Image (cartoon, rainbow, N blue to C red; front, side, top):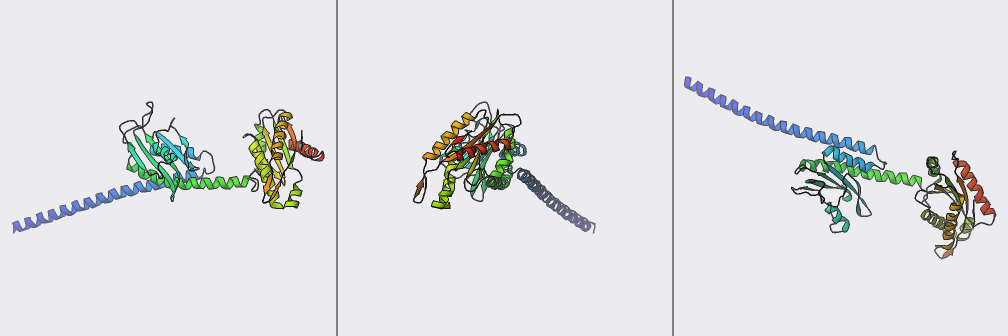
Length: 354
């Protein structure tokens, strides 16, 4: 009887220990799953925060630098480089490396040696960098795709061997999916912004944008600035004789010549109708502007405007005003340039008056 009770006790004890062991195993597995879910939740929260942070800065020129700084901060890497696709070439937009010639996959893509870029991880005992003063032993190349369209590439690197691993790859993959959307949003924003600043017909800045920025420009205009008012001579006759489409072609042709002839620091806008206005930076005398405008006028006069079977030549009249006083009165300078333009028109056209 005692033996039977002892056997039953031992059996129950063994069963209890087995159930306890099984329960502990289940709890351990559940704990691991909870930890993994917590990690995924933390990753998702991080990605959402980063996406919101970048999207708040859409439209700013430094958005790529912000992305590069995020890569260094979040991944803890030593170096990060961001490339964006422009004209079918990957252009380096931000890096904290002095040289990126060791990014061979980027070079091969730009040369047309490879047509696709895939995510890759490299850990190498030997120095990956081609110069001795910097050590790189761990690297991830991560393309930025939106659907099947390549937008750019992020390359992150570390000086410690085997620092970067598959966990970093997962995080970087998730990050680049969001970054792709941010980059595309930034492109669309800048396109809309640019369209709001430009005249749709000529591609010049529009009058509203010109006046919204001109006062800030003249605050830092060097020793002075000039305003040039330009009017296409007998423009109405082109519309009357050859139609408005030919008139549009005249406007575009003249605008293109002027736009291609001014300096990067100058600004040209469509003032209204067939009138164009130029702001010129760091000007102290009218003669230098006069000589430049004479050259532009000659270029316009020599190039025929052709449309369908119509071919004709165009001339322009110009008025110049220079401002070198401390008040930097934009309105007064425009008024004086406008008066000189009318003097040019009333004295026979095809002239520059200052």
